[in-house]
Image (tube, rainbow, N blue to C red; front, side):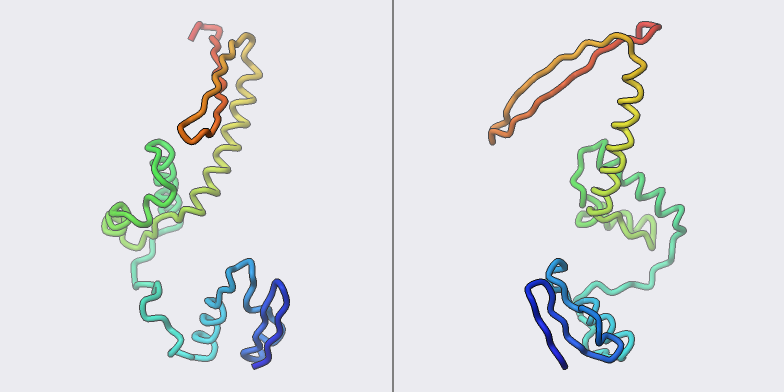
Length: 165
């Protein structure tokens, strides 16, 4: 096995197919999972299979459309109920979802964060667009700090529509 190393990469040539590939990258925490996966699948090195690792179970597949619908409902619950982003991964909610919808893998926290960021941009744009149609508005400001001295600036906009709503 040939090994080269510099500040950002560490390359191991384990087989001819991977001879020019950078296997371990610093930005990926020096992960070897892709190397292990390659050796198991291509070279049939079954001794590298992790006993306690996450192994795919033979669960029924659910349609992508249904999966997206469930993901959307999970995100709505996280936002509406102020739940942590990983609420559906490490709790009894995960067990409940897997029991109720066999084959469904709950949405991961990174996916939740990414989608909430998109939703924020979407709703921010819609709000700006809507506020442009308001003729008169009143703005209230408040500035406060919590116990850890994190400061917050709150802006509240009040307005009436033409029919006084």
